[in-house]
Length: 154
View 1 (cartoon, rainbow, N blue to C red):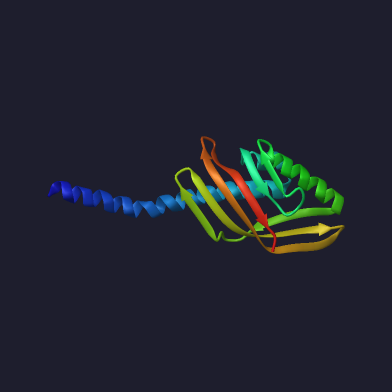
View 2 (view 1 turned 90 degrees about the vertical axis):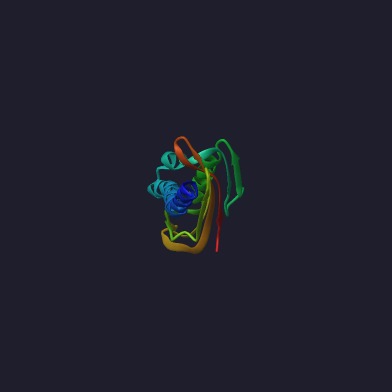
């Protein structure tokens, strides 16, 4: 009877702790995503890219639309910088809304985040609202790293 009671107590404690552990892991995943975004917003590409895994895979709305490999994040950032220069886009700012979904399973995670992009095109204020950033992450010794993401323009 003691063994059965002990097993019930342990399984109840585990069940009660599981949501708290999942919430902590989700918060860590979003902290990594926010770090990437905050650093990009500040123009600190080096710090943003540090949140990326190597290799990584990216799909975005501008050509060549895909970047992959060990330098995917820095290659994407360089392509974005060149595009912005060509189009006269400045003051880019991405705002995350409350994530629609964050799933963490062991050392892998998946996040779906509604986003708003504001910028100036040749000095004229512009906005892209209702887009979605979907990311996959992997937990490494240094913390959560983005292994893939896609930007879906609305």
